Length: 215
Ligand SMILES: Cc1cc2nc3c(=O)[nH]c(=O)nc-3n(C[C@H](O)[C@H](O)[C@H](O)COP(=O)(O)O)c2cc1C
Image 1: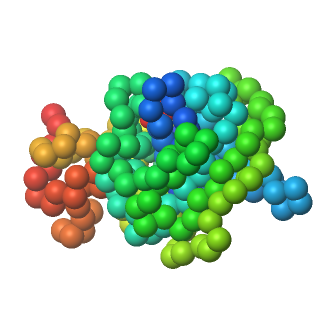
Image 2: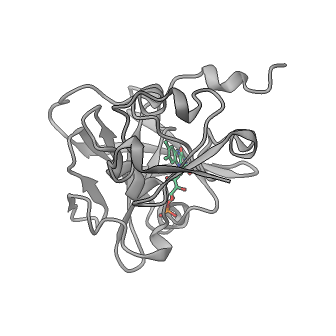
């Protein structure tokens, strides 16, 4: 079997918000799926190493903010590449906090909903939380961001604890670092030289010209 066969699957980009031990926290996911409409049920896969995992287990609740194509890459950078264990990731991300203590992102999202966990299943690396939406937006605004849009238009990457992370890509591709925020770009599919001149750092928005090759 082709070892990258799962890259053919389609996903949507969301932020999962949780009530943390001391402050609200959120992380980027691409694994929220609809299980059924009646009763309304969803599932999300969260890596055991992510702080969000223990927060969901503690509170039994989480929010889902569905990102739109207008949600900035900086929001994904802030929530998807650092852990709530190391500080408050929401400091520079507009959000509101629900009565239940979990945050909803307010950066050009399409919609949000609050979920109550009804069941969870452990795999070797992830917990699959099965949950029922109990409240949420009245309308859906804009176009939801797909993982493909994130990868091919924003040129974003997946960190180690994302289900779509592929170690080989990191290992063999040439690496280029942003001299402003240290974000590292490496891709065998789209080498750095082939990125258009208009491409900007997905984390801090700096132009392609500030990137330097890592020897
Ligand atoms: C595009 C993208 C998709 C991701 N998808 C998931 C996911 O589905 N499940 C997961 O556990 N982590 C996923 N991650 C990784 C987490 O967002 C990341 O590990 C985050 O730092 C965890 O933060 P926390 O420790 O505060 O929970 C994804 C990250 C990115 C950038």
